[in-house]
Image (cartoon, rainbow, N blue to C red; front, side, top):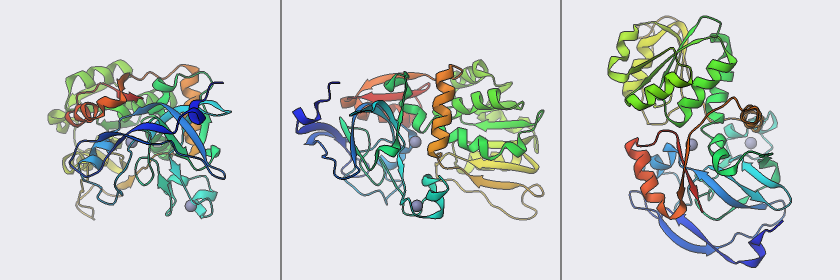
Length: 331
Ligand SMILES: [Zn+2]
Ligand SMILES: [Zn+2]
């Protein structure tokens, strides 16, 4: 296998130096692994809306300078093509021991607290965070690491509400929402109503199996208490308010999007016994399950590859909502 880490000592990386400023392309030393660490030669990294939120200063706790990017696939020495599980836990706490490293209080995530995949190489703490792609194309597969796994876990956690004949409303049919429709279609017998502000995404929702797809300004017409489940992939004040109106008594609202919204919670404000929860990424095992679904060929997701140097144009397009599926940066 040709692996050129040893032949080079510098790499291209695109780096966020200050919030609200464009990322800068620069040369950096290729990371050198120590102990259990392993280096991945990046082949593709998905551009997630979270990356825009970080660049726009909505997560001031992210230490700068930072290489963004948490949907990463590439090649690791001795392992071939892999996808990177980006939540690196302490491996001692109860969450880590139960295989939920994404919830580890001491966890670090690639592209947030550690440098991520908007570069030619990535340093990973252990090869246990690398899952073999076994034939999936790395550029196409990269979004599975977040856009694929996050809705998978969200839906797995609320199976009790997804009985045959139940209705699920899905707000936001972007990268994550498009996977969610397919999991609901393939893994449950629920009726799916999709909501978005973009008619092209509503067409896509119908193509993927949504029974109904409506513009967000018409979504109130779905009716109060009309859904056992509302999955909010936006998470703004207005989408959470919509979710609170649509959810049926004893139903559940799952906030997945991190637009920073809130909604009042309390007796009398909401239908009786409504549940609210958030859902954050997935476990290593969830990612493995998503890879298996992808290899079976039942999942359809749209990827447009973009050269790494065009990262700021890519972030702008995501900021504007001008992407049908996922942009993947290719070094
Ligand atoms: Zn993401
Ligand atoms: Zn832990």
